[in-house]
Length: 430
Image (tube, rainbow, N blue to C red; front, side, top):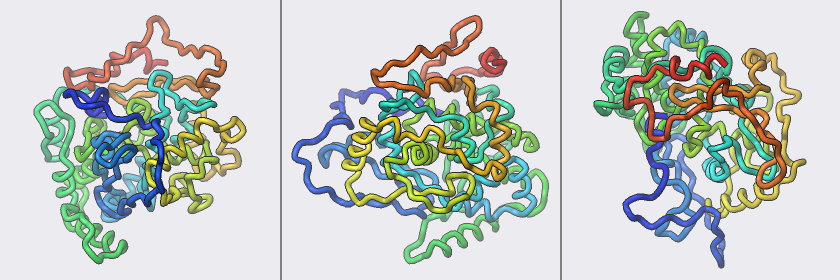
């Protein structure tokens, strides 16, 4: 994730350290209803979790819950695309993901889960350990996990490919970020705010009509440009999301040849990105918990049998305060017994409806390297075992002739031109 190290670490500037999210406040009064974010805002404002006094927010920093891209805008642009463009997206295997009707995050559950994430062992620290796996990704999102690794050269500046392929500008001389406002305007949804008194159907119809008015209707370089702009929005904001408004375009060189876009293991890249920066809100993480930790009672079944599995769930709205909800989830995670963990949640699924599951099955039960450009992390399949002080055998991960040294969190591949297919050759070969 571009700038993944930003907004992390100490408070800096001599500021007083925030209270721990684990601290239970004495004399806790009656809970109040949590404000609900509008499900149709184009840039969803996810509420900051307030866990301390009213003048002292505790939990995620402001940058972690800043405005995020609303799913309504994505669906409106997708619906505005012409038939031949939709066919191309189907050929790239984006179709099932883009046809999702709703994509709302369970902010409270994600906040509670990320407090239990151990970045060293890449696992959630529960009484019984859990690790998101490739099978979870492919079943939940329908993003393929087989194919070419998402890796290539990263550059000090992306101005040249952004100007040539998108006709936009990056936000700084040494940057791989483009502004959401400019991208939004070029896709025809500059006026994407929900109007007062406007119903959901009217809102979506207006966005679709506005997008259709600016999108090119004849095949050629202009339609390729429109498609790349849309894919940068989907990949750079939703799949490999960035904090705040900017949209990452490190994947743009992979989009130069649109006929090869469908060959990449985007689902594996999403999991690598998730492992590297779980602090970013992840809708997929919430749905993962609905299946593996059903005793938490956070998910509500919406459409049985639908695929991808994101279609089947919505989070259960809770009228208690956000602080109270997070504390209750923490208490439940502290005591969840082995029998309340669903270790094989997908038994009985009709895999015929998800052919990409069969293609990815050879990778499901292996220790394997996950690649997402400059992020290369090991997936320890055998780490799904007991943690938090209970006995666990040492998990060894093969590194061939030398140990793997991860780049520091401050290194994000923009300080110098780096060919990751050379730098991580051993991991790619493995």
